Length: 235
Length: 309
Image (cartoon, rainbow over all chains, first blue to last red; front, side, top):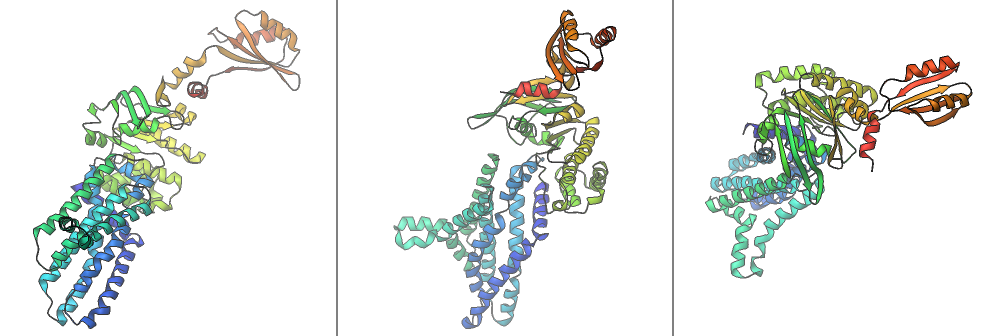
């Protein structure tokens, strides 16, 4: 476990020692801030709902962007090879990167707490729904980050990594939207594997363990795939 | 210290390494010599536990690389080809990272970094980012990270590639210091490096081991006949006849040079040095001798002979 933290710290340091973290967080806030406030007074409701509706879309672009270098760059430069000759297990390397990516994402997201505080002071904010929203974003962020890392581990090329993770995350987002066009049993299945379905459940403020299990399973599944990809020792 | 038996590594259908066996003794400096793509790097990647063997066994200090991977890795310091480092980190931060990952005790980390900075000459660049360093300095950082945890075995893949002649000399000195009390394996295709730094040499070609011995042994094994260059600045004909008559000496080549000089390439199976006899022959006959030297087989000849196809 110790090595996992050292790796996570190193990764985070590299985000904050370069423009990466600052650009990601400020553009994230600009984006969400703009769209959140533009409808705020029109709706006249003390709710962060428009924020929570928006962030998954933002993650759709930002998570692949943040994770695209994770493994692809290390493979390309050869630092992954050196890292894997240290007394560290493959899973610790993956876990370290996942923690670093999550910390960056959550750091950006936590700056939107200002919105919550502001709205709460202006009106009666539903604490349950707000908590559900942030918790849902945490789980969604974790699962998509894990998928992003997997895509990064498949290639030396960052662009390919971005496109592949974007593609997978997008498909998982859209998959429950085709409900009206497929037979009933299939619609239920697709709903269950769709990230948006579970996210909407959590937004209601009711924490159903099935939704939590979904995200944890998805995270672990991508993690295992990444581990397999690394074990093949490409390059 | 290291025991490799029947090592084979396949990439799909291709055998990068084919049934290689050798031993490395504790404290030895072993050179891997071979053309590009011969299998040197692959062999190193197996020993450092980066890749698993397809067939065969590799034991490091009695431990199997397949089953005791983490323990083996702890004993080895490795510098891959092209010295991959994290560009955005400073030298100090990077070495601290490696020291932590390698399990150096927290209290000792900074002092180890200071030691490595002294040994590898990094004191002037310790707070610079790695991307700002010249290749020579990056190599030194690479060596520093390979040794920071005081491993008993250091494996270096082409440590002097891409360096200018001055940098090469500096790195070579560093490697010689490292080799003084540690087991070192280094790979190269610079033959002079092998001659200067290595106790023993393995020549690898196309995945197979084609030679294993000290540089001296390898040269001796290939010396065959004693070859002498005997040059005279006088009438060549009588010299030629005298040499032709001399038992045990063959004239393998006669070279005419400007200014009336003729050089005879002589070979003999006689193991005694025939040069003093040639000197006396020239003196007795009044020939003006211009050259008398023994042609030594060097490692390059051995290498080319073994790896040519």
